[in-house]
Figure (cartoon, rainbow, N blue to C red):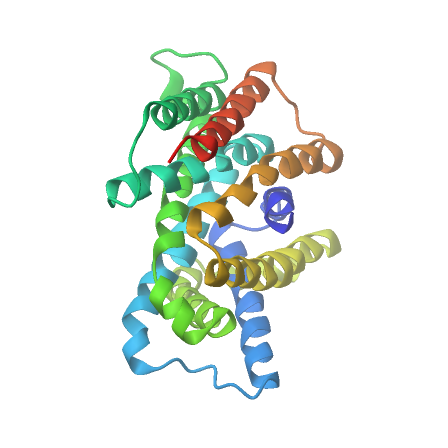
Length: 280
């Protein structure tokens, strides 16, 4: 639910902030929240030295790369489009499990994967396939969101051993802190601090929601679930995200909705359901 609304809040915040400034500020708040929770519990926020390589990789993939892909992508496309494409993540998770030899690719699962790709193509192209497709600004944004779905599926299987060893809060705080520090050079190079004084009350509301709700609590809840359940079962809950994004974007941003995008999004979700229900 938090992440479903996050696309709308990001879209609203991007009206006043650049992607780099938004992501850096958002994760400064999220990191502060998680470190504060650890200190309040009497737990050291400093991770063990031997866990640093895993946390560095998690921070790079899940914070630095993922959030820049999504923020820049959302500056070029709509929240509705992004929300529909996020429904592909469970499909990528299933495909990754096949590639890692953990699952077999049966006929039903293969049909679901093909249907998911077809639905994503409908969403990205809005049904208008042709030589000018990749020149459209919104299409470049959709492709960046599409890349972020692959990235998130990979991120969800990284550091499972570290997660169970350190616990959800400590592992998430460590990965988020390192990812946030990776963003700092970009923030300083673009002089992002100059954008913050002019941020409106609505803009600050969006940033606070993204930082404390989506980055702090959202990542914590996600890792808490991964600590207790298999990746594929946790990923299945992302079925709800496109519908939450769709409702929030239409109600709060008055974004236009095309029949082609809705059809493609529904095909993605149906394909995801087919993959999850396919015989083992």
